[in-house]
Image (cartoon, rainbow, N blue to C red):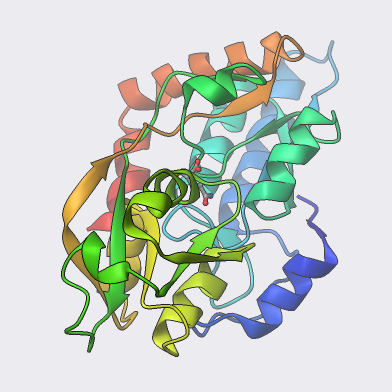
Length: 272
Ligand code: GLN
């Protein structure tokens, strides 16, 4: 597996707030296993070349994608795409771009597909084809753990709210901005957003529930508003009308790893 990192991703990596080590590109045990299996499959059917797909993802969106202490990219999304690749006999060239850059790379045909905790929205369906949903989500507001002032959206009046460009959290904040009269501070990545709330420049941020709840469980000093907003489930995406073959492989592989227990094993390994 190769890693492509944009300058932003490198900068982010260096400033990551959650104590993660710098990224590297060495193979994980899973990949070694996958390579072995691919060799075996090729051995059995020496006819075809194994296809390699460029799959774009976010930088830090734990537990879906993040660098582990050795700098390898891990997470539910990464393990799912690798398990599906193994099941369907293709190779993954992971491109760690950041969410908004990944959206653009897929649309521009620079990546074949993306898996990045990406919500399946009607608006996006005009530009992307989505797989079957593989994980449910919601949007929630978070404030600093020590904040006692922000109890409701009304309390955001005249204050800064941190959001991440191109996301459902951004879209939700945007939809209520006029009503509650706050300013939005826009970040490329989730860590930048959390950091802004931690240091008190923003009083709140809007993020996907499964991600921020995991972060808090891992020690992020924020707390959640009790009201969750409806969010869409996550799907794997390809550019609209462009990569039906890969989408089919994803859906077939997803069905197989759900059937054989691998999907649940992956989710449990990060959430239990
Ligand atoms: N689920 C959100 C969205 O699709 C956020 C994804 C992300 O930040 N990686 O907009």
